[in-house]
Length: 178
Ligand code: 5GP
Ligand code: MG
Image (cartoon, rainbow, N blue to C red):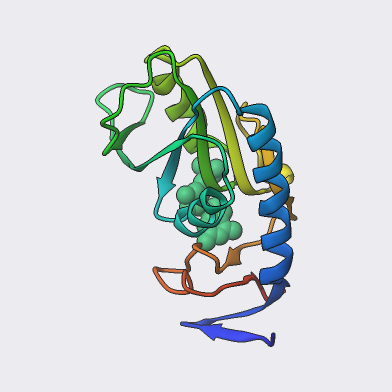
């Protein structure tokens, strides 16, 4: 792996494909154990989590379902600012064991606003699996139950994560060059 250029920015190698694969296997092992009799419903948050969701779900060996959503943010009419809604969530969550799949938790803002809407549907349980978290950037009460890598507060690219739409196809993770 060597440094790459995407649009106007330089990125350096950060986490290899085999390290990612190993970590995802660990998460899958834990979920396979904890959910063996729970028929979990995975919900992957697009776009960024598509690769993580695909690789993780291939390693799930228990009965399970998966669905994909997009979060749309629009200006609310109240003073609270943006309202976040899910597009494409057709399944009923009632009494289901939900595992939300996210590419990265940065400030936690997106999930802190969206999670209450999922709880409103009365799932039996709701856990979060995030490939990446940035503990130093966290500003909201969001906690990942399954975390791939805790990383420093610097922009990352690849493995589903983009810079201005590019770089999602990279099989490994890159970090903005300091
Ligand atoms: P949050 O609401 O937690 O601050 O941000 C969540 C979203 O911001 C992520 O789902 C992701 O789309 C985007 N994001 C946050 N940090 C990064 C990063 O380092 N790289 C990329 N490509 N996207 C990021
Ligand atoms: Mg995202």
